[in-house]
Length: 601
Figure 1 (cartoon, rainbow, N blue to C red):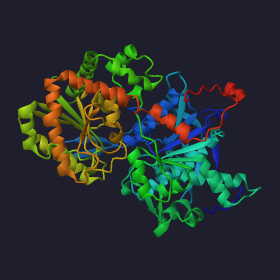
Figure 2: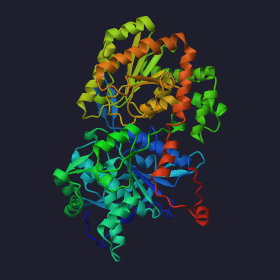
Figure 3: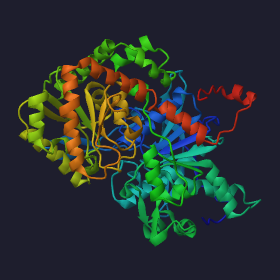
Figure 4: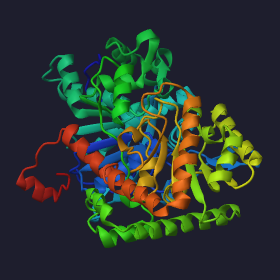
């Protein structure tokens, strides 16, 4: 990339609410377009944000010197309402940061379309097991000094047009980096970009390097080499449409001619388009997919780059139901501090597993009754499917042959099916998928209860993944990068019935942690997988649940011991520390000064 060396710096201004904090000892900055901090803060839409939140929660538990950056989204993602036919309507999920989080105490100014745009930040503290916290800064342009069109740039998550998205990515990447500097984060060594939305961070870092070295200039290649040593990039989607691509004319309009020309000079705008994933790839020394198979897919999509894999995980303390937390506290008390101890769940009696699950199931059914007025039978096999309503996730695969499903129930036993998930407001195919689930529900008869929980969020995610008996996952391969809902279910002894894609290729043990739909070799589409889905239910799962409940409980226990102990963000974060983050070893004096007690090793 080509950028002019100059002494100009962007404005840093004080909000006057509190003095700037002392320079912190954070070493890692984590940038994500969305972060699920808690259910009442609507700064997430689904898996990407939940993963980011879980990673930061584990960073706090491990007392890792990390700081997070995202946007404030005053109108959130959206609140979902479904009518009797499954027609989705949306309304803002508004919140007021002023009433929930504290002001960061400083702000910066970035230029968008040539206009100065002031960016302030709010600080949320992610508190760990030992009381230490990881700060997360939520960037906000809703300031009266800004032009009205700029005041709303941090209002909506994944809302607006292409220009709106590009402006948000400038605020996240460039504004976020400068905000950290304004707050005193000068010891940062690693910058982790969670998806390509924050790739403009690399532009801001390179410009900072060029300013710092202008009296002792080296080659641009040397500067880019230094930049790469700071940057880590995680890509999450094997779907080409999931990677943000902007026309060069729009990029030039938003970030200016010189910056756009500098990016283009590095060959990052082929065919007059900027792919944010390729910008992040080009500027990072470590790149990873989010499951082993996804790493392979990503290497085929971007063959010019070296791409590794670190499989996703979930935060065990967040997603384990109270009844299982109590059980683990009694039987494997080290499980919170070291998630690997869940491996010893193999020593827990099957009856105790069943009792803990019955309590979680009762908790879910009570919430469903309160929310919908529907009473479900606790003795019936209950399937859960809660995903973003995207066509490739195939929420209706189970319902594709109603006659066979009814025959299955008649011969093997009754079923209850609980669905949840939002379709993006602009995704008409996803909305149609929800309507098809509703239509199937109206046609089903005899021993099958089906309901759809609206406005799926972290609260319902925890209830569903812990309270159903079987977790269903039916993505069209190879479009499942990882998936984490089945990992949450496993923590609560809920086995998966899933297509072999994403994390399940690694977590699947047939009849041990759950069951597969099809096999890893089949390249056919839904017909073979539909047959396999029904056969597994007819011949294995439903009979085992009703006729051999202790054998089913053995699979539940296997899911905890083999999947819960590995597919967690504590293990995932350790892998990032050991493989990706360029952390200097602290000297003893510096350790005493910062009072950091790293628990990663």
